[in-house]
Length: 230
Image 1 (cartoon, one colour):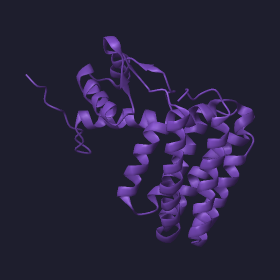
Image 2 (tube, helix red, strand yellow; image 1 turned 90 degrees about the horizontal axis):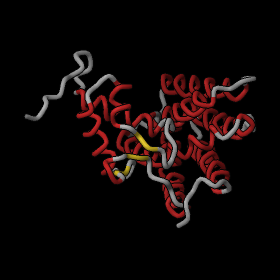
Image 3 (cartoon, one colour; image 1 turned 180 degrees about the vertical axis):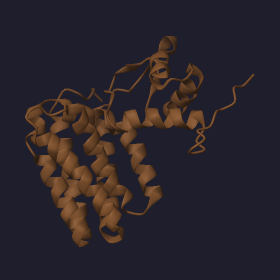
Image 4 (cartoon, rainbow, N blue to C red; image 1 turned 180 degrees about the horizontal axis):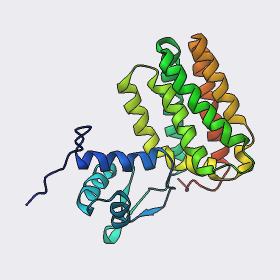
């Protein structure tokens, strides 16, 4: 008998949708690394649910190439090749640059407040004596998506989420690589430039700042040993 999905009485969200959203957030937010194996039982326990909705969520993510199934039903975050990474980066430069440009044209006062708050949170981690690298990963993601949601183009944001399902784990490795890497302040400078451009409605400069941020990270990642051979 097929189990009936439960609903969150506050939001109307089904249990399956909630589990899927949680797993997507772990990938987009860089909480896992390329090649890392996931235990369905452990994920279920951490979310306080049975393994059935986790299996369904995993199946959906496998279909999006965000996870892959190994022999004996093991699941892992797929390793990424240099060729795949370069292709994703090329697409990100175009799509995320477009979103930043739209954000400068469509942003509201509430959007500016959210972007500013995310920028401040990321800046605190960069300047902390002992930065929380996990928090740095999350606040970096929060900044980018605050910008992209300010575009007022939900379809575009969903496309970007799909891209980050693939690159989130790699970005995780970048920001978690060392506190010294975080303290280089390169990302902070790009974020500040993007925020300033969006505040003054300068679409061209907003795109340029986000593109520079993505491209700079890409150059660093390609210099590491995190990508597999093509």
